[in-house]
Image (cartoon, rainbow, N blue to C red; front, side):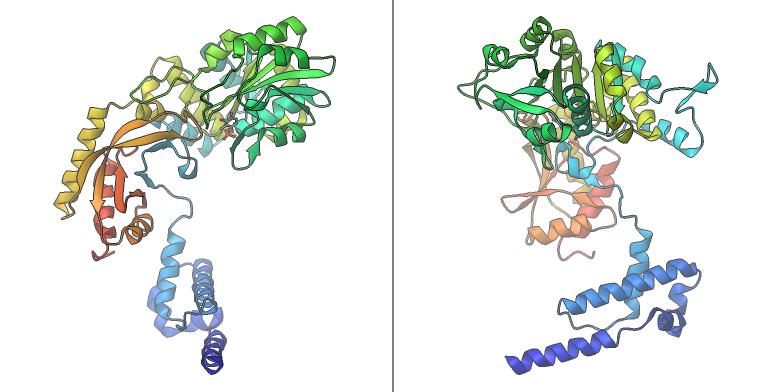
Length: 465
Ligand SMILES: *Cc1c(COP(=O)(O)O)cnc(C)c1O
């Protein structure tokens, strides 16, 4: 044992010492053809990456010396962006790991138009003076939600923190024990409360909270009544909760504003097979919530953003808080959000990809899966089409069970298949079920099917990569 491991270590150390320097590699004649025409800085970056990778492999115990081919691979890596498009064959429409909502072409075009040059982001063209970066959005959000005023920040987690800090710091925020939730990524309501400087006052129990519980908790130090939407889990059985209308009535009677963290934030009702009922933002405004926060890139289908709407006097206090500046959005967000909101204003929600992906009919999905099956067959890959159940995702509509269709592949090495599928030139993200490969077509466009079929054929173990 001892002798053998000494030998291995000795071999490894010799190989580590033998790793070439960047200067040596730049002068190595055998690399000249590979590096010809590559700008020097890029060549140096590729050589560094190649040597680093060999070093890491050696340290992991893979005894293989540096080869010229490593430089070719490093150059290829540098030519591939780290952040790049993937094909979503998971059937999860709002997949946080895959970038949540895909944007409408109208939104993408607007982003490109303002990103390329200068814009009137904070410049009032009518007056020729400084303006507000939220101005393009306020009118649309007022029309679409019925609220008096609006503000947009980086994301809904930031919006919730901001609202609590601006309206309840140093005072009490009253929350039901059934709503002290974790949204994901460590975003927990009690922690956000603490961070905002508000004192958390818990009322009710995990499963049941009544209006009387809130009423008993309101006192001279109450800054805010808080309602958090259970976006990512459901409470069933012996339960009771106070709806936003009742809570708003209590707030008005006692002179305490009511804040609702709605999270998923649909602007219009989403009706489709398997979708659960979700409160819309206009419904919450109409029910009397004083301030509402929701995400731009969940059910709304826009860019990442945290949208705050509500009563003008409260919004003025929120806008004046220093966190508003710290959480501000950039011009690309404003551009994408304005274009997305316009689609809703114009009565064209089906032009918003998220809305369309969620409301596809089962027969459309089945027809698409059959087309993918045909394209796979052309490449010698046999798959069967089956009904599967997908999810909305993104911590929205936890009870939804979206009936979808998928191509199912029986494979010899299913894990290897998924790895290769992810790591191809056109990464495809699928899933395994009972040891079979599942490609849900819900989030794949007609145009993507050909590319996906080619990627799948290349990823089948045994087929050339
Ligand atoms: C998703 C969610 C958030 C966080 O929204 P992000 O835009 O992801 O920051 C906050 N609150 C609720 C209730 C949510 O569902």
